[in-house]
Image (cartoon, rainbow, N blue to C red):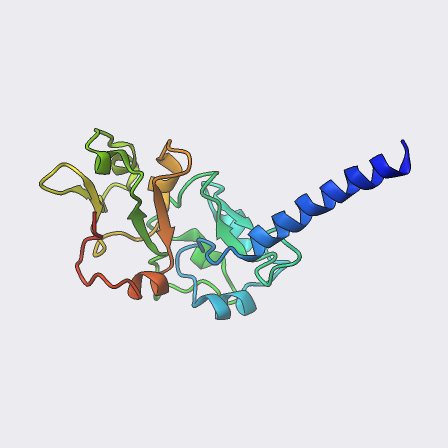
Length: 192
């Protein structure tokens, strides 16, 4: 292969790698397992080589962040491509954590938000995310127009709704508690 083709090819690969790293570095929220302490403290407390919570998760949705550039590298998170947290009654992930990164004091992981692309906001029928919400929580409810909304008092941010959503990109996201507190809407339900 001549030099100009090689530099063109490798230059393209380098740009793709740089763009991927840029996207990963701008990621601001990893869905942490239940009981996770504040993010900055979690990154310090979660032992990089420990996989106790990963092994303890009976549903295999807790993984470790793989991004050597990020400060979150090798910390535990819930991979919503694999599945949402089942929110086990006995919280084996919290019990397994011996480094105090996961504590029983705060089991709420975040809060869900239905985006404008949600079919129910376009006056279409869809209940997939509502049925995915764990039994006993049912944080997704319909308003008087049939649109789904998130009851913030009930939502624990497990991400099962995100995993269930078939839209591309997803029409529902889970946000950190800090971000949800900063929302201007003071209502208990998210705006439609």
